[in-house]
Length: 205
Image (cartoon, rainbow, N blue to C red; front, side, top):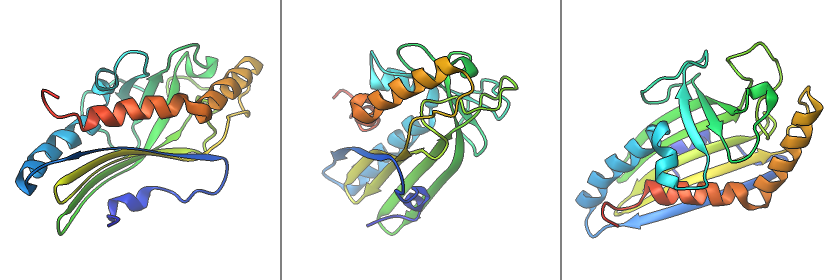
């Protein structure tokens, strides 16, 4: 059953797409409900993602609309500042940036869902106007955690993923093409698989 929160995931129209999921199943609905609160908290604590995903993965931090670091749950208009392994774009001051477009939570019958959509964005910490990310701003990453009965699913859905070749600096164009090609070819899949596994990892598991 598709929840209303999942409707924030855009239709695939151009470029590449990816679907990365991980699940955890419980003996009773009550157990699943209790653990789902933990899973939601893990999704919303952006600064803990690197710890959940493990070594060799990107480091994420949450900022407000102006690029100032904040320690709270993400809100529409916030940014995620991303430090991926390897060189970052000059326009992003060494970081990739995405903006939070939507955060939706719904509960319908025996289905609970929390979803967040982010899109490549400019660096809010400088005046440069080009997108500071290896994907163009047509792309989105959509983070979804859902409880359906006794099963909890964590997922990242990438949509409309195309290299950002509109960067002003030639070095950024080359970097973005290389990283985006690697992302489509499997780097993002490994990153997101590690993250969604972390979201649904049972305590002591």
